[in-house]
Image 1: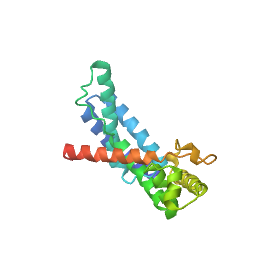
Image 2: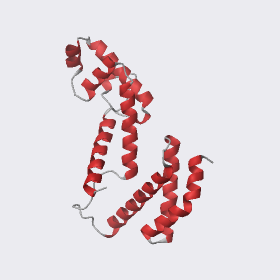
Image 3: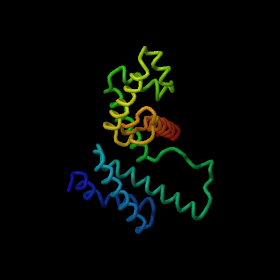
Image 4: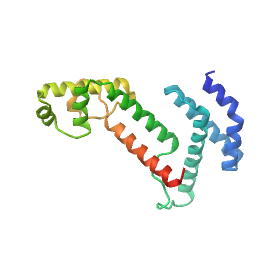
Length: 198
């Protein structure tokens, strides 16, 4: 059993007590804890969690919230003025971790390749505009973009997805906007925490 697994087994009674206080139904509390443990173990398989127990309590909150949301959809309409579109704690943490990996991968690129990538996918310039601005040939710009995407795909596996497919005809495609979405989620979550006084 992994260290995280052993920690979760030892903390199981605490998690059950916490869930019972929150949902006031022993059967539902058991379901919440089971789903929480599965999510934490799965997350830890993909990426090491620094504070698994604290993370488990946050995931339990997320599971309880989701269950309550589903129950409200079944029984009563949700007041859209009260609904929060911000990410839940586990989604927020996942977005921050993905953004950090993306930023490290971007920083590890050679400076010219990073500049070409940023000018194309962040600033939105065309390849021809980048070539003129940096004094490069169009083929050199294309080569830098393909290598940047390939490097990002290798370093940030979940970045695999859609990008400007004309920039990398044979290489594995990556979605550089995923990090921008994560960054936006981080800003919204920070704003929600500030607004909530936490």
